[in-house]
Amino acid sequence: MIKNFKWLLLVSLTFVACNNDDDVTIDANSSDGLPLTSGSANFSKYVALGNSLTAGYSDSALFIEGQKGAYPALLAQQFALIGGGDFTTPFMSDNVGGFKVGGTVASGPRLYFNGSAPVPVSGVPSTEILSHLTGYYNNMGVPGAKSFHLVSNTYGNPAGIGTYANPYFVRFASSNSATVLGDATAQNPTFFSLWIGNNDVLSYATSGGTGVNQTGNINPATYGGNDITDPNVFASVYNNLLTGLTANGAKGVVANIPYVTSVPFFTTVPTNPIPGLPTASAAQLNQLFGAINQITTALGQPNRFATLVANDNNPATVEANPLLIDDESLPNLSTYITGALTPALGAPTATYVGNLYGRAKHASNVAATRDYILLTAQSVIGTTQSGAPSPFNTVGVSYPMQDSTTLTAAETAIVKVATDAYNATIQSLATSKGLAFVNANATMAQVANGGVSYNGFTMTSTYVSGNAFSLDGVHPSPKGYALIANKFIEAINATYGSNLKGPNLGGYRVLFPASL
Image (cartoon, rainbow, N blue to C red; front, side, top):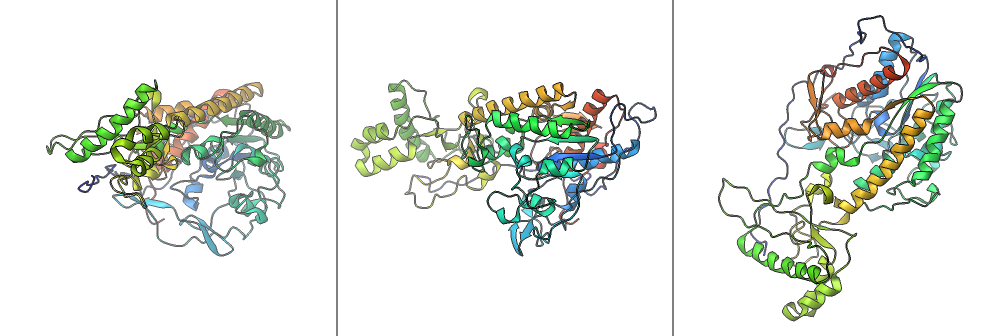
């Protein structure tokens, strides 16, 4: 049925390397023409806590140049102009990215854009996780950390790598039983930043909702890696973090959590990338999906399938068909489909079709019911599903995209509820403790919806060419981290009466080149 189907490229990428090789520079001028002042804040000992966003993770890896451009490093450079002290970072060993554990490569190198697609840089990671770093570090960002990980006394234990420990923290934790919070407060900071909670929902979303929503379960020790953290657990942990960080009078700045649907990992691949089908294929699929729509109508449920269009062989027009996806939130209609199709297809084929399409539907692009196709899914769309019989074996066309490749509307709603709960906690505690607050959610929403203009640059979430994001589609680009630093500085100035000026975005790359 799909024998003559030709796959089209999903995304046409135009790369503008206008300042890809520019050196990172900082604009040290004051924001108001007056001498710089710290206001009521004391920046002499600054410590930053968080996850990959704090560490400077970019292009699917952590590497030296990315760490140098992390937003806390940019803040520290500004703080240094008004009494801020040294700011130390647990630098990786190279600009390849990735790392080894016991000599075996456990995480691959960073990505770069080769002019047509993101690809890994050449080279082998030289960072050895078990080569332990000594001393304390001001940048306590730990890629992959969730809120409750920052207070876990097993998170830095090398014996737990691969299970309960984090290799990045293992590398620089002060001891095997150290906590991120403990190592931060041991430095007696006078000022701190805290941006945590993204991974409490992000891992669920980037896995396509394969984890569990743990709302109601207050024991994070029982959570899986892709699970959503219970909002009460988050609130308790976040309160403990701020209580510990402010115990000696330190001031600080906190940021809330952007909606996952603001980042290009979820918005780059359209819901309708399937080109016009061969006429016979479109007719056969429409007949089959129409029959299932009749079943949903009879059951009083919404139709699940659109009418597919055929290739009209006119090069001046481009037909677009929606992806066929699996949605586990839907009632399973396998039995009904099997029964309805058995007279026409025979019991064996009808049973297979019933099981295949019991929870299948066409992806929706309507705002209220929007499904999101993961960036990583584009490599499987249009491929032949191994083990599936023809004509039911073209992924996204006649074989449903599986759960791990999509974030359905139902899963998106679950993520939003949790994110809203976390953000309410963050803002409430920031207010009660008099801390500066960064509405990162609002900023990223602007970036995703029309863009944010800053220093003459328009920052959007367009993949590769939008300025704001790196090639992994989740973490910021160098220019994106500079924008974040500016937003933190705006909040600090507003709360503490300082007059810091943030870095000029014109001094930062859009993307890192292959060689650094």
